[in-house]
Structure formats: C-alpha cells, structure tokens
Amino acid sequence: MGLLKEQEVGNNILLTKAGDLLNWSRTNSLWWFAFGLACCAFEMMCLNNARFDGDRFGIIPRNSPRQVDLMIVSGTLTHKMAPMVKRLYEQMPEPKYVLAMGSCAINGGPFHYDSYNVVRGVDQVIPVDVYVPGCPPRPEAVIHSINQVKEKIKARGKVG
Image 1 (cartoon, rainbow, N blue to C red):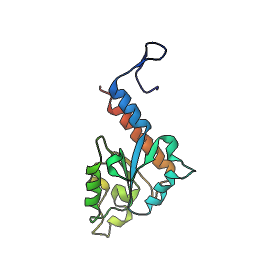
Image 2 (cartoon, rainbow, N blue to C red):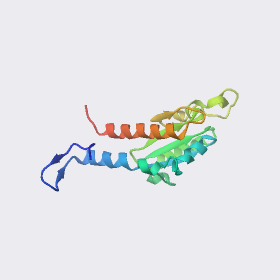
Image 3 (cartoon, one colour):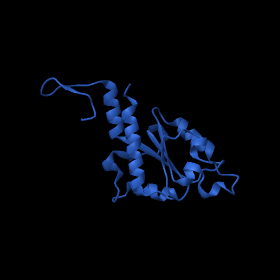
Image 4 (tube, one colour):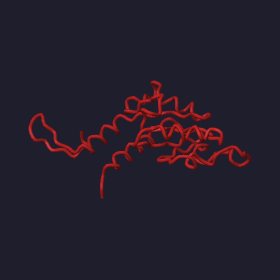
C-alpha cells in the first residue's frame, strides 16, 4: 500500500483518501482490450502466454470494451476500420486510455506513402496516451508502455 498516502491509527485501521484508493486499485488491476489490425497483434498476444505472463503485472485482457480501462491498437488502421475503432473507444467507460502499438498504428508505417486507404496514425481518430514504436515492438516494450500508462493513472489523482 505504498502508493497511498496513509496514516496508521491503530493496529487494523488505515485512513486514506477515496481518490487515492481508486487510483491504486486502477493501477494494480488494469483491464485491457486488444484491437489487433495486423502483424503487431501477434506480439500483443504474447502478453498472455507463460513467458511474459501479463497477469503478474495486474494487466488482464477482456473481450468487451465496456469493461476495460485500456485499449491497445496494433497494426495498420485503414479508413474503413477507423469508425469501428472510434465506436469501440466511445463504448469504454471513463477513465479510458489508449496505447498505439507499432509503427503502423503510430503513423501509418511503410504503407502510408503509396496507399490512399491508410490512416496516418490512430491519433487521427482517437486520443492516444502512450506510443510503442517498433515493427513489431517486442512484448517487453509493450509491458514497459503499459507501466507508463499505470504511471499516468497514478499521476491523474495528484493536484499541483
């Protein structure tokens, strides 16, 4: 409970602010939603296997956008898929965070030069909180970026 500003009154009593407790619980139980559009999705799937084990970091995948805190968009976003990404983002409850994974999700990657149908980055459609560069980025980089989202959640409740 080191994240909470706490006072120990007795042996079994802990006093803290409700906002600090909510941010602590959001940080340690981050539910994420995968929106895999291309090859980066394969690296994103590695977060759930035994080698990287995202559950030990408190990041748990969910299938419904109505239950998640974090959306991970990976791969090439086309103009045809952009309305679906926006709709899923709007279905997420507040507070919501977005992670753009891979060069294609960040700026269209190598496809934006000669393609009329590629969006020049997910941030053209929805707000992005953290970018993970690479083609494709390693699962370790994704875990590091999720930890950056957690830091952003911790800082959210602080004033001043």
